[in-house]
Image 1: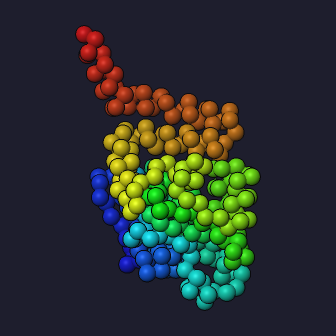
Image 2 (image 1 turned 45 degrees about the vertical axis):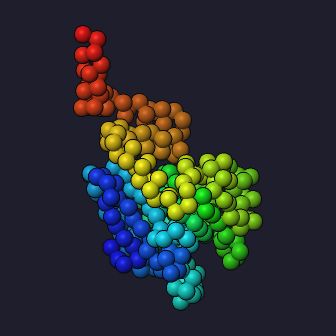
Length: 255
């Protein structure tokens, strides 16, 4: 980890990655992007990890995307391709993690910050949150996969309107559109996300991972194939410790 990217474990099985550049609204320079990609790769190997939270330091911003000061030293199309490949691959790895990933968003998530939030499975925002799909105001488009994720989450008409207008969405709009799961009081997104992560961590770990797998199958596989994926996940869990224990407890109550 680096000073600009912090890792904490506030609950058993729950890790928190914090973008720690509050003086720059938690914008990411390339060094921080590289550290982020490395940390997501490391998370994929942690067998005891039950949930991961991404958040930003302070209450003003979750992340404001790429650091434009740093990006100004990388002016070529090749520079741009290297940067978006780095972050695009990191966010693809993030959504492929077998455990739920929660974005805890206080304040602004602009440009690439909104793309990071959309790559998470769940989003907890505070009442001051703003998701800004503002790339068009600089004459560019999402480069980290945010356009495709927005399309799949809200549908073509709304996605196109928000992207071409460079629109910033407030917390009630995010909740109504299904882009936020919960709205917390100002500055309390991380606390609310930890509550949600604690609920997840208390469940059977294998069942949680299976649930993410079957829903991801529904998004990425043909319907019939996804049905078979879901069916394949059930039998191993049936003979698992949690199911056996809870079934026996049920039967003991009937004796």
